[in-house]
View 1 (cartoon, one colour):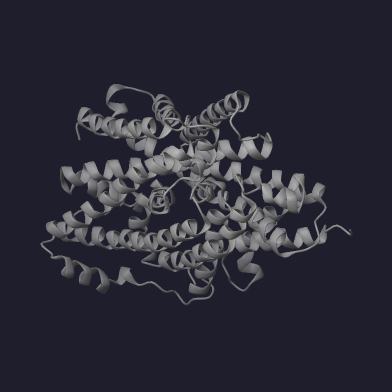
View 2 (view 1 turned 135 degrees about the vertical axis):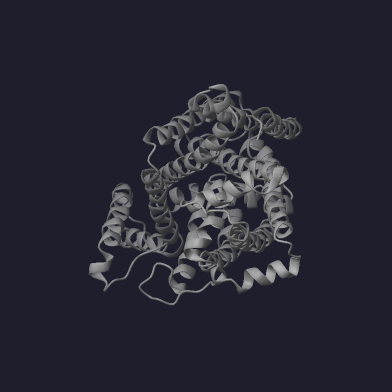
Length: 479
């Protein structure tokens, strides 16, 4: 694709983002940045959350991974569905009752100062590394598609991209993101639909014929019943429940959007509609994976050895200009949707949990919030560049997987705070939060020897949380 043509498309996309930012930031105050003045329509939040949840990693990886693990990922997603329902009917009433800005402030009231700081610290680390990794993938696409043609270094690409995010989020924060997420979700879904339609045309198939072909393919198998396998259905399903609870229900990024709804019933409707839409879109991505493999076989195209390259290779080189444009906009939208909301959530959590900021309008707190926003933008740039310097895919993936370990202590802290009466010794909570992921890693590494060939998958999060709860019980106060 011509670099200038690509640049004009992406530039037009960012003009739309800046226009939305200008409209939504008019008359914005300090509360607009943190909770959008509790004025977000629930259906808009539900739709926009799809783009934030389906990151660039999902956009690229899920279709290609079908060739390795078929539809087994759907087992995990079905567990997510139950987890989202629990968030709607258990966690959201809890958060709305306490009128929270940062969800981690609950832990200080319930367990102590250091308990809140511990949860917030693990969230900051998780979100920063996760957002940097997702954005790293998109920065590589931008580099290859445009910046390389003009000899512009990768570090400059990253700086420009993060600066653009800062520009459209620094004034109104979450109020702007609720609306930009809507635009980004639209591009993501359109890319998916465009690709499916074009594949069916290339293979001379109607809609129903294509659905039938996909459903009959061996790659469309869903369930695994080998109890030793990481893909064993009960393990995947239960892990999906707890992962949704931790990574969505106890994550400041996702919950900050839910808490912008006017009322609790509106927030619950948002979560229920989002959960159903999420499962549907994931099923479409999995179906797209089967369709892409079938198209490659039909056209005699060699499938890339790295499955993550399947969708980009076919979309950019074999499915026409329209699909290529849709793919580039979709991957850009998916990554920016994750990065902009993460940056705002990082700023919110640090300001409220670590600085104890009064979020009411004041010149001093507004200046502080702006400086923190700039600081996290700079850190995000440095982490992304660090991924590039490492330049070792296995190391990068290992780092990304390690982010999952940091949600275990958060899940454990929330469960203990909500269901156990006695407070733990607050001074020892950070120690337990460090020990539990370490023990989880050790148990996972030797699970085959210890448990007759059993391998841990996504349920590592549950083990991590259980160890955290056990540690909190051991250090509970005698008072």
